[in-house]
Amino acid sequence: MKIEAWIFGAGVFFFVPVSVIYGFLTNWSEWVGILGVLLVGGLSGMIGGYLGFTAKRVGPRPEDRNDAEIHEGAGEQGHFSPWSWWPLVLGLSCAGGFLGLAVGWWIVFIAAGLAVVALVGWVFEYSRGDHAH
Image 1 (tube, rainbow, N blue to C red):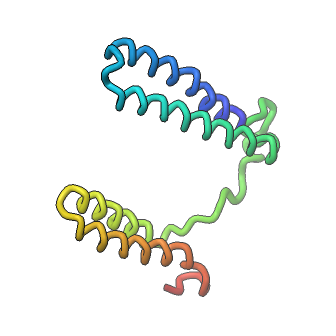
Image 2 (cartoon, rainbow, N blue to C red):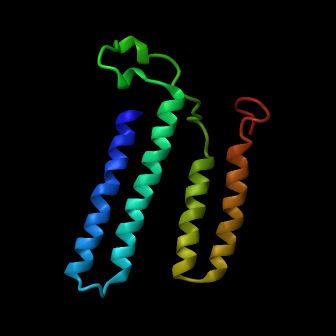
């Protein structure tokens, strides 16, 4: 994860000067853009720091070494549920929440309730065994 940490860490050294340049180009009158780019730089630094600490804790992966073989990266990469419908429900509830911000606040409350149900369903999907919904 060292290369990922370096890429995100370099974002700080890119976005902070860009925000200062943006401030000069707008005569410091457009604060939303300046603050937005500064926040992107801070987020990039936080992600880079997290990936750097994780790289120290986990150790070098095959992707980080020049002498690694292809077969070293084989095996299980994680646990994924390809048959799960809960991410779709959660995404639709988030879309409903944004629709509610634009159209009417009552839709936000319905979407928030649906989001809670979808999140609980997704988290506890495997609590009763595979394919037991």
